[in-house]
Length: 258
Ligand SMILES: [Zn+2]
Image (cartoon, rainbow, N blue to C red; front, side, top):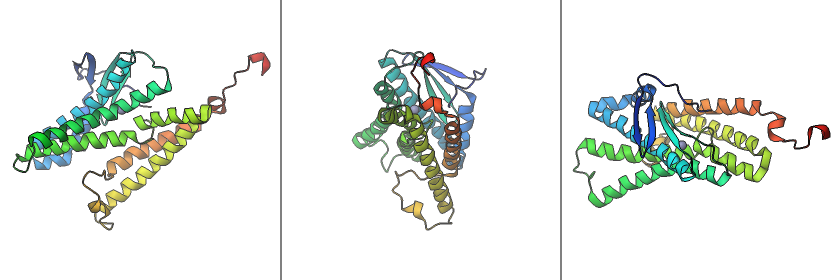
């Protein structure tokens, strides 16, 4: 469902840990649009925002890529607007292995979160007397990595959690697992749309200030997440319609026995 974007003449290319990385121009445009409000604080905060999203997305995809390498496959990384991809050179067989690969992305982000938090706890580099930009960098690095990982763990396609859910449902329900996981994904995506719209309206003063009472680390929904999960729900719904009887009921009789 997430396809690799085409190569362009404006791609930024480099290697990290021997993995080829390609940054599509839409990455910069999408990230800039998403952080346009940060621009009010000053251009240096805006640049810090773009750098933080870049690092968060790259570390997440490196987690997947390293897991692919662990299981004997190469991989290359693509960063696009609002998402990244780690594309393997070989298919990896085995549910357990595929689950590990899916989880490796979010957990690489959580690891970075822990490093940022731990280094500040020990060295105090982003304490109260730190310059505002350093304090912003600390908070943004921590939050973006945490939220990106948590969001990706939701059992919604095409997020990592959706892939984990498909494998787990396959374990329990065999050939019907794909349909079960798609229904779960569709339901969760709709719930996320409702939560996001509620938060967005609440933040505009239409609610009881519910979002102001959330702990600072708890992800509030926005118009952006409402659109994103609305799009996922639509994709899931279409895919559910496409699954035919044959997809979920494999007939292993020989042709002349049918
Ligand atoms: Zn991922």
